Image 1: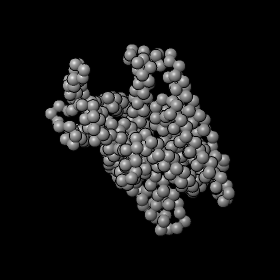
Image 2: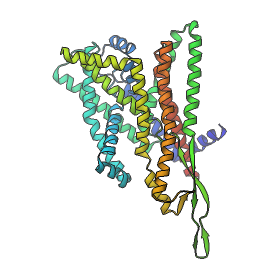
Image 3: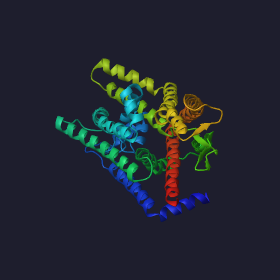
Image 4: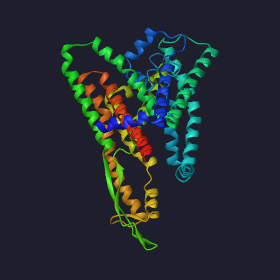
Amino acid sequence: MNNLFQRLGHALKDKTILRRMLYTVAGLVLFRLLAAIPIPGVDTSALSNMLSGNQFLGFLNIFSGGGLSTVSIVMLGVGPYITASIILQLLTMMIPSLKEMYKEDGEAGKAKLSQYSRILSIPLSFVQAFGFIKLLQSQQVLPALGGMDMLTNVIVIMAGSLLLMWIGELITEYGIGNGVSLIIFAGIVAVIPSKIGQISTLYDPSQIPLYIGFLVVAFLIIAGVVMVNEAERSMPVTYARQVRGGKTYGGVSTYIPLRLAQAGVMPIIFALSILLFPQMILQFMSKSANATVANIGTTGFSIFNDQLVYAILYFVFVFLFTYFYTAVTFDPKQMAENLQKNGAFLSGIRPGEQTTLFIEKVMTRITLVGALFLGIVAILPLTLQAFTGDRSLTIGGTALLIVVSVVIDLVKRIDAQVSMREY
């Protein structure tokens, strides 16, 4: 703890790091200001009733940074950009040309894929904005809109989502941390005061065991997330001895740390994005004037609302996305090639293909543990809700998982900046 405060003190004294931190704070403050600007004509009482009785919209409100609770101009949050990123990364695994560009072009290839994600975010934000407005109209939250008014509101909501995407990327480039994750983090943290106010208003002494149980579970989740994020598998590496100019180089042994949670918090964000998008479409379909479309939407939405089905889908998506994101961000072949170029080898493993296969095997095993942990923690609040009937535990557990992971990542990035300045 003392070391943490020392690092923070060094960071505040360094002008470059302080400027990055202030830039990050300014970006998040701007985001919160935008989240407080509503689109015109909102019926607040109807909106409150709709949000209070819908778990799906409660989740969506969290990830829009509370923007949905006020029907703000950034009510979509960074959802379209995350969805576009998921689609592009899936295409990267399936289309050889995209995969080659990502693997071989290095930073230039990643920059091109990021640009494709931004472009894809435009039509996705249009579709989501239109769907949300129609959904809000069906719930009498918004009045009936003419063609031009509808188009104006859709464009405003689109612009808000794209502006938020831009702010997130600026934070990533000029601030500290992943801008998109920090925006989601800020949205989650922003609703904590109102949640505390609700709990204090509805305080019931008979529910004290439930409150204590929730605090214990929250503590265990925090401890587990920290342990898994910090856990790593050390692979011993030996550098071959080389004689140059009468001097001997190499011959030393070290290790390569492989993180247990290589994917971090992104599988949770990806899984929620994938689960929320079809629910939004199905809920929109359920309000259709066409009886067949309405029946399909109602049936599909009721399936998603089934606690057991939702928990199974959530677990499976988190598990699969953990492997997927690890496969995208971690390349065993490139690591093996780098070791061979630097005259290094894993103890007892032949350089080249054998090293690649060994690294893949180790990474698959440790990712299994990380994926199971993330999946279990993700559905744990849903399990608690099934026993307690308290819907707030569902949002609280998922949000807590994201908040802890983002804070850990942010602390590591600040520590890296301080270490770099010290060297």
